Image (tube, rainbow, N blue to C red; front, top):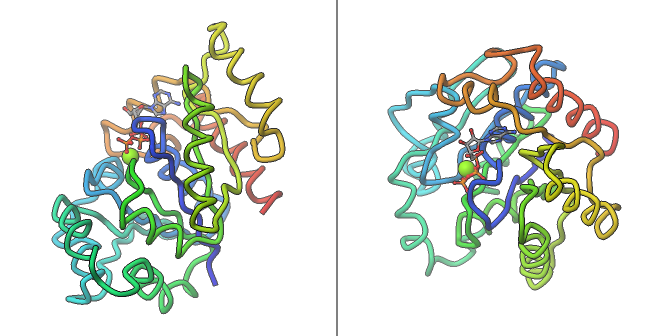
Length: 241
Ligand SMILES: Nc1ncnc2c1ncn2[C@@H]1O[C@H](COP(=O)(O)OP(=O)(O)OP(=O)(O)O)[C@@H](O)[C@H]1O
Ligand SMILES: [Mg+2]
């Protein structure tokens, strides 16, 4: 059975999608069969990987069709999203056991993968709850900026209310030259050291460029800081979990 990891933060633009793509790509390069699930109606993950899909996870969640999984490469598969997924938040809200829907969808396919990563939307709606219910682990990317720790605290408290907890966090878009970034990293290391990965993902223009080309960082610039950081993070993930 696959290990299922939800990558989540209520805060937008912290690197959830970028990290899902590149952690997944790094896992696939270490011979781990990996499925990436785009659970965000913005469908950025689908776009970031240059995937063109006829249908999305929305139809599969409704039970209209099997999950339309696309083979991006041998070890890297994608379950795409589309704007239509926005309807899920209102359509499923009154359904009994709605948070189990993704779980049911993944049960028969989980055995085909080593890892399943879920890119969550920046909110605590039905879609994120589905991701948390399906996941074995919840990872939180944190951008090294003002209020980062507050955002982490809010998410931690919200999860606590539904009987869940954050398993691990990592800092993204880190700029060592900025005093604020260094201060925030120190603060995080002193307050949530048990949850924080040692690896930080540095700010690296190649990461943003790869996204616009529909490529992973390993396809676009395999020797970049971004590629090295995501490789190091995945080594830590494989060791710790
Ligand atoms: N390490 C990095 N260095 C440079 N740019 C980065 C890095 N990580 C992410 N970015 C850029 O930051 C922007 C936001 O990243 P991303 O889309 O992954 O965030 P997100 O948390 O998924 O956002 P949303 O909440 O909207 O889903 C993107 O333009 C991405 O290319
Ligand atoms: Mg995103």
